[in-house]
Length: 71
Image (cartoon, rainbow, N blue to C red; front, top):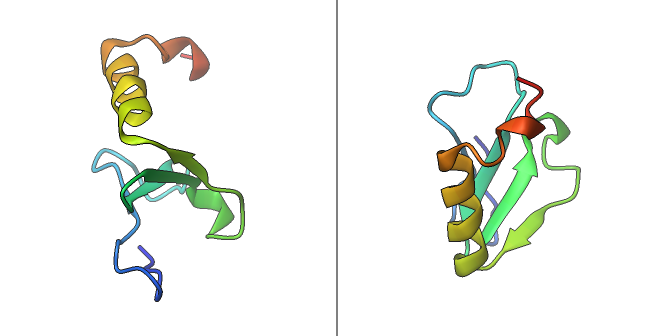
């Protein structure tokens, strides 16, 4: 995990994630930022408002996005 010096919100990844860095990390700064763990903070960051994040999370939990994982 890394911590941004300018903002104390810490990047976290899912508890079910393995140590293979094949996942995403998120942090909350009033909005939610999402990044690819493999990029080690050097890649782009997706920013979602609270409502958009809640909608995305509900879809992920319900299986609506499973087709994107290739399973």
